[in-house]
Image (cartoon, rainbow, N blue to C red; front, side, top):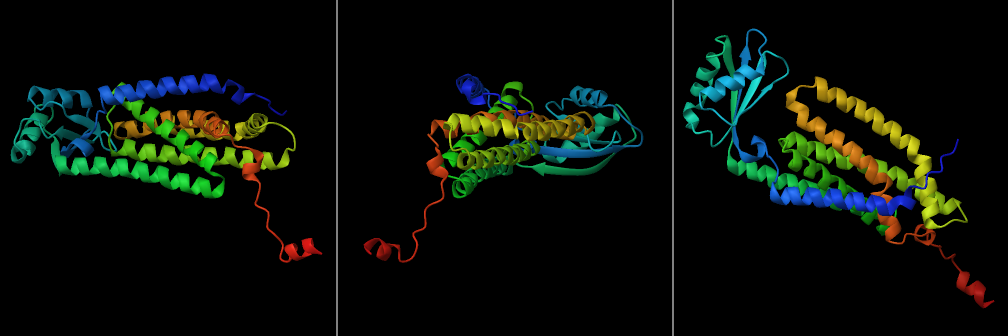
Length: 308
């Protein structure tokens, strides 16, 4: 059975939905910012090991009772290994921090040993933040150049619009919920760009193919046909990816919760944007069959034949 859903007939509704999401995301990012993790803000990470499984709540309480506030306590691979990340402004001198943390932890359980300690200064955190933003910008520019070379500049702008749409909304989600934004989340956003682009390229390939095959039909009819033909593939890919990410969220541990949440939101938004934003943007720019026709190559000696 061939689907015949008029996706782009509802493009105005999609534009309103996208505009609302972008405005809310932009406002929250401007007003509240991101709850950046210690990777960006700087701080100290201490990894400890227990002889027997522990619970995180008593560890957090022990730190709080010893005036070590603002820390992030997470399991590191198992219920025996725990990481404690403390901000730079915790109120304890850096050289005394290890002693204070271990003293606090031993008020809960004595069978604890320190495994390692690492420190990220605020300057390093700022550098990571700037490098991460630059990586996103370079990725979008390279994608625009690639799509322009493979398809046409109107498709390139459409794909970049869809990717920028996805990045803003995922970042806005973290700003609204104030879930910690760390390097794993930034890596997830870069992965979302790749995932969304792959889906968009599949749709664009089918649109180009149908523009050249279908002799009749407007641009919106050709795009609707293409979206229907790729819908099954899009849904199967998205659903199987989401199943893996949901399993990762529930069973992967707290250390990668931010990573899995960013990918879950990104896959949902990316699937939506590849159907509506990328195609609707190319349609709004006036893409036609003529834009995708290969250029005619003039045969050698054709000018002499015309004179005879």
